[in-house]
Image 1 (cartoon, rainbow, N blue to C red):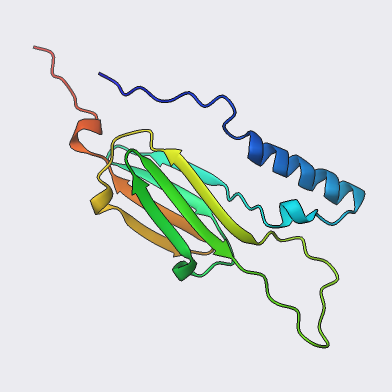
Image 2 (tube, helix red, strand yellow):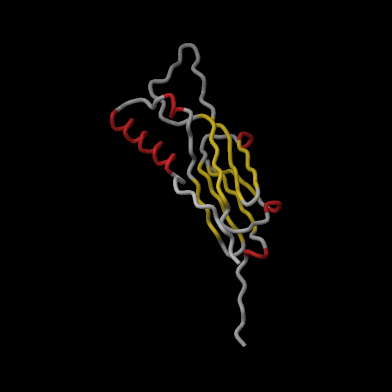
Length: 145
């Protein structure tokens, strides 16, 4: 029997609103408002293979020590903070378009995995987490007699 997933009708709208605001700010030549300067929603890909579930998160400019990964029940929570360089004497920024601050992405994993056997790597600004699928979630062939 399959799992029942909770319906989330407004999933993704906050990120869409943020992206639209950034588009209009850019088009009109405005600096992002303070409200959005601290919001940061990294993009995520979730890929399923025969034996594993692979989650990739774009979080460039971060140190691996500033990234936190947790499994909670059947879900995954990825959080961290990308810090802005402080202005110093005789140095100031004319334009700041990169987003800084804390972020958190939380979502249900689409298949049952073995979180204790997960492996994570961070290279070229992309966090990659590989979860082996549980034995229950792996496809099995049934031979016709």
